[in-house]
Image (cartoon, rainbow, N blue to C red; front, side, top):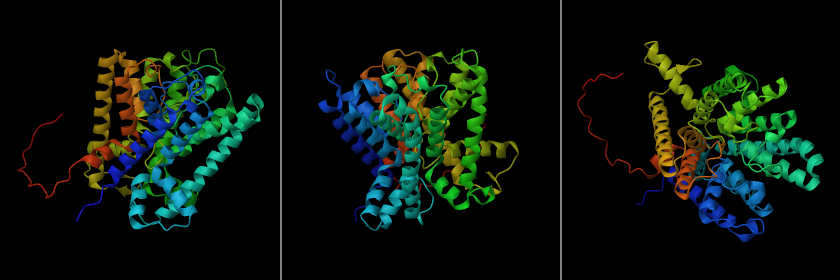
Length: 443
């Protein structure tokens, strides 16, 4: 009997199919502005960045792409952010089709949840919540954009940036003011900053966390362990880096801004470096200490089953818990009155090691192929692997080989390093024979 294809492999193949479809659409003459052309490798890079909700770009989205091209990018962002299975479930529910067991298992794999039961109810939360938050974000952003740009363009800008922010993609259309400027023109705009930050945070919490919050409201003690871990790490990673950015960049990239604008910019950078890709300050002007903080944030990323990338907040906290247990001489690893599974720590360590190894390998390749300075190189590869999308301008200067490396890194970051490794690994047909134990010294 032929064995079914592993779900992780299906996920990889589906993402590759969507990327190739997006590449073909972006290469159509109707996708680029008159007098401009798009090379296949650049179309592939853009489609990968959009599908993997990263935000690294070769061309300025406003200056190079027509409304059709921008719509293709937005569609890829939406599909990539929710996941193909989530979108397929939307159409199945709309058509009244029943979701079978194998489809439920595939959805479980796609949204990274531990329960098969109630998966259809969870998907309803996901789809309804996505439409609600993106619509609210678009309405609020249109308050600012319509008076500046007119009704038609203002609504399009509001929708585009709302979807891009919620899906943690970081694509923008602000090239109208200056190419590759992101949201720097709105650094002091409270409405735009707060709406974009809220969309990024909500999209990065994770779909299962949404359901838990909707069911238990503000009763923290009744939350599942994953929800407690996600909320705790998210709060710490919002406040601590914001304070660090404020003091590190007070006389740096934020020089000349008012106190309120500096506070707003500090919180915005703290949020966006986790996985979003927007920026309101000149990233090339960041102090080296701020770059180090940003690398840590990009590496951690968002939460499992969300639109975000990175090793994930829960992976980071599991490793912190394991370290705390070892220091205290405890064998059991846990927190919030719960003990974690023994295998979970090994999985977290594996994810950390795979991410770190791929990032260092990619950084070495970029340095060798294009002579990129190490700081800018690390910033770029951390941004790609964490599906963040912030850049110091390196992406527009590298050669085709480095673009392919970054594209592979973005796909790796969106799907997950361990998932990609398991997708094509050959499973053992029989359990291995245990070897004799021998002690060694470490540390």
